[in-house]
Image (cartoon, rainbow, N blue to C red; front, top):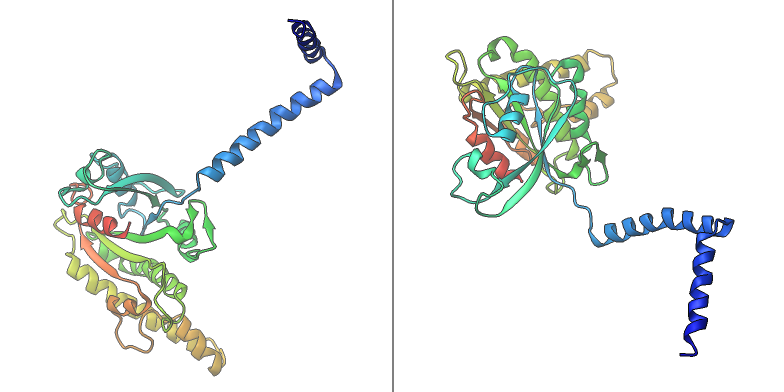
Length: 302
């Protein structure tokens, strides 16, 4: 009992010291306010390592239906009307690997059976002056590059959405944009003579609006694009020869800018396999919700 009064007195003195405004008390209080949250943040981040989600890029000319596709896959109901996007937009989606989920609406549910994987679907502008957003994402596909959506090495595939009903009129523009995308992916793998890339990025050409009478079937979309890409390749090669560049420089530069098998007379998407790039052409209709084959392609890439 004799020790209690001194302890109580010490506690009273300490409490009075803390409650009395003074420079040391204010300094200690400020240090606690600023340092403790930082220490807590560091502890949490060290205990929970950050992981980037894989992502699929939506690209293609304006009016093809990229934004409508993103809205359909996000909401699972009627897609939004097609409009020109001005900036990239990403949504987080879930895919189920359960074989019983026969449609994207079933497989994308949070309560769908089987294992679930999350990923980002990123819509990019299709207007000619705004396509740099998509090209920036593609050109930074290396292990050390970062984009506004995270680790660029997590890019798993590109869905190139086009309007199959107007392809005859817009073929040159559609093929030119696709040419730039495929060439960027090809350059990313080097010469194609090295080992297979650990971060392969494949391409799905989504031929949209097959519900319309004027739409070309996927087979004709493929053949028309291959023929136009071959013409673009030849035109660029001829332009390089006419530019006055030295002969030695032409050989190296032409090979670096030649899409597909170097020196081949005709271009086919099969030539991209040399660079570990698979190109699939699949038809569908966003307006009618006929996108299950596209969703299956996404599921196989995540």
